[in-house]
Amino acid sequence: MHVLIRSKTHGGYAVVDQIKVKCLAFGRGAALSLAILLSALLVMFASTTPSVAAEYRVVELQTGGHNSKAQAISGGSVAGNTSDTFFHALMWNDKGGPFTDLNPRRFDISYAEDIDGNRVVGWGGSYRNHALLWSGSAASAVDLNPTGAEFSQAFGIRGSQVVGRGGKIEPFHALMWPDGTPGNVVDLNPRGYELSGAVATTGTRQGGYGVLNGGHGVVRPLLWSSTPDTFVDLLPPGAFGGIVTAMSGDQQVGFVASVEGPVSHAMLWTGTAASAVDLHPAVGFTETTAEDTNGRQQVGYGKGSVTGGTFHALLWDGDNVVQDLHRFLPAGAVASIASGIDDDGTIVGSATFGGQTVRPIMWVPVPDPANCAVFLLPAALLCRRTGRSKGT
Image (cartoon, rainbow, N blue to C red):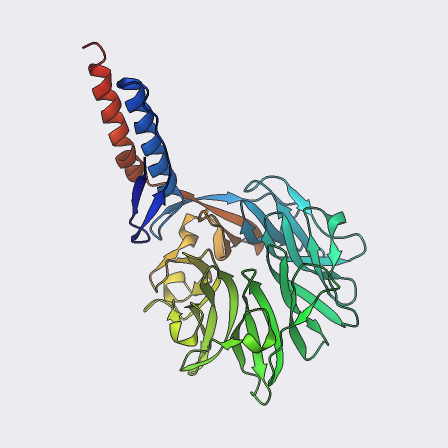
């Protein structure tokens, strides 16, 4: 039996193939099993494709300090940082469980930038920063600093591939560690560029920024395919500069600056400058930035008249219709940012409360009860019908 499920969110079809329901006997048992299977599939599919209109439950992540934030999320595991005295990289498992302090003993500070499964990348040091890769504990830290480099920082990871920047303090170059080891490093700096940095990766493509020689310091959003000569300049016409901050699937997100002034607009690309979509809302905002994407939705932050002039965490669904996530926060929150989104739509970031205390926050999607009721109705009716006919 093949089950074909219509997806309103994506306007396409999701095919659950080769699901064989063996009805050994006609009657209530077989019908009930089929109804439960269909209902479960429908509810599962709906819960994994949240829309911008979704409601959210807010969870404050546990930390050992008063100033902390969540930076990235992958498969329910979260990477973040605390900064009560010195920056320390942190990791949470199971969507908000106990945290692990990732700071290596030999370093005074550390900072987590991205996570993939239980592998976290970032940087740390006591004098100059070194790119770091963790596998769930402080003792697991691998120093990725290339031989002879004055410094390095890692910003993105997917699978075994790590990206960042390093080399000379100025100018630095975009770097890629293909297998996450210090002895294998690729310099992605394009010919004709003064400096560059890689911020995100899908495992096959890398995103970041660069500055042209004689480019008057204008930062341009760049996309690579694992070698320096494959770079694509994503700067759209009319924009002054920009950066790719995150990638997933075919999507790249970040921000660009307007020619009229140093005001950023959140942007979405799909591989070319011509594909750029301005996510900046038409009214109510003066500044927006996209920080992450799961390939369907985008998160970041912005401010303007509708936020009272303070930054609010924001969610997009591929266009300039935005949802303000700040409204789900408890009383006392004065500002917020969203910095990461998981495949299932769970969002992480931080919120500032009175007294300037920064807390790590998780927004967990709440399934729409109306949708669940619609999906479960056929099962209920089928069970009721077969129940009445049992005695005939």
